[in-house]
Length: 521
Image 1 (cartoon, rainbow, N blue to C red):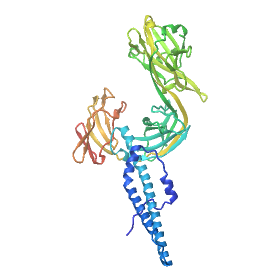
Image 2 (spheres, helix red, strand yellow):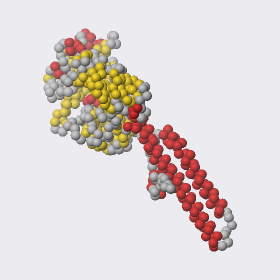
Image 3 (cartoon, rainbow, N blue to C red):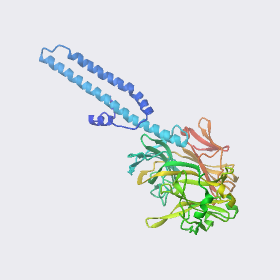
Image 4 (cartoon, helix red, strand yellow):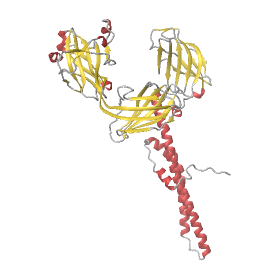
């Protein structure tokens, strides 16, 4: 009869010792679960070891053998007992090592399950779809670990750990640079440019100084090499919401007030918001304005705010212009969202902006790069109201910037199973002629591709969708959009996304769209 061997049986004592000494950052609950799992087995092995020791003790109290033959027999028994003891001790070591191996496996699956569920919002089998990645890079004392990934055929979902190995610089609120080109990007080897990507902080552990992210990338093919790169990490986010009661704007008007022309072609891409008033006046964008305030004509600190200051102010033709500039490079650019309006101290009401513009460039490697440091807000107010208006600043900023070069490459995992089918299901779209042509169902999402004749509201496409199971039961995917929708006005095509793990995916046989059943298997 062939006996089954323990997979660790052939490891040397030194290898077992190394494995038994393995350390892993397990949470207390996971450790308790594994301890309970193996307590019985290890206790049984220890009992066997003690029984062997007792037998040997009893033999040692026997009278000495009078003959050489008896002595030889006793020696053979002792050697056999010692062999049993070594094997029993080895069994304990094997069980302990196996416990650690299984502990690593179970806690990995538990953690991946928890992270994917926290992102997708449900689904008991999400972790089964994930594949380990394991690529890592370290710079500036920060280690980037790519942990696990799921490819649903449309989007790759990548779990990433950022670990501060030498300090305490990471926080729960992180931002990764001004754009995918200068901050974070996820790109495939066959790409002509950066793919669409997104990131979200899923968890932060202050004890291990680890921030866990979900990074998503589109257009990545199964089996191709993808590269995740990171160059900027903004941390220590601070929220702002204050009214500068001690700052009289009317008293500042004689200290600045000079305008200059601006070349929007050189600083394009940093325009701000506009009001309905602005649009009703026949203006389309801040670029329709030919002048801005001269930069840094003054430096007026804002009480209670150390990340920005007023760099110019003017009142002209019924409009109050206020220019603000970040106090340092960390709180500049799009990492910070410092907004402002005015408060009328007589009524406590807010005075909204007529339009806003961001501009400014700096030399980077010998060439001008638009950075939008300067933020100018313009308010339509009467001159008589100026003494009663106060600046209201709100939004957020970061006070820590870590710059480095983190780059890892990994193979895009195989796509999860995707069920596809063609149909002609009508959608109650916001317009005319909405018809679903193709459906795709994966363990993570439902995607409906449709055509339409005309649309009145491209952001209000929705459908009543149900999953149909083998036993005839159904479950609703949702009438509202959980993932989003997109319309191409040129081709009159659109896509509707429902992003959520599907329970018992193997038992799904059909999809019901507004009452139309589409067979999937």
